[in-house]
Length: 141
Picture 1 (cartoon, rainbow, N blue to C red):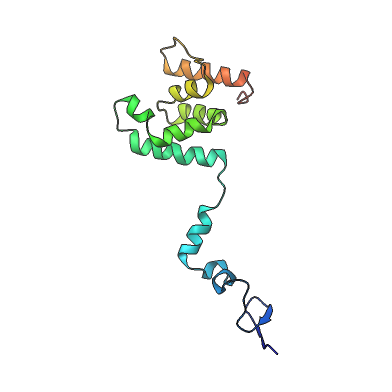
Picture 2: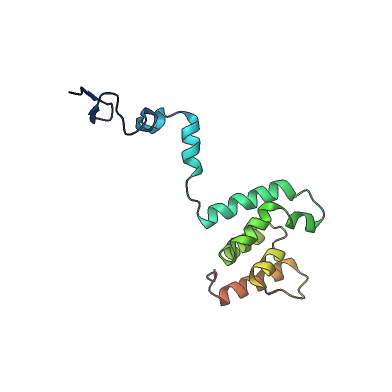
């Protein structure tokens, strides 16, 4: 007959037989740092969180560049463009608050140039906002 041993999680199993490792059974705060880091990597980011993380990285690594083509070729910028139309509201917010070479991303994502021919930055932002409102991508503020 197999002896039963009680585990800290309260279950009884035959001695020497565990269906989970003792690492998995520890309370979260007692797990080694590497396990906590691995678990954190599997959290799902919202569109806003992912956009902000990539935009922050892009600004940090390209704001010093004077050539727009170099900045817009950066991996984080390309990842934002690849996220598609759901990033338009976030890009418009960035244009209003932080600035940056976002007009190219808007053109690539939408296939349109809502601010064609407009040279004034603020006027171009307003035209893109009108465009996004007319398509239900943002709500008029």
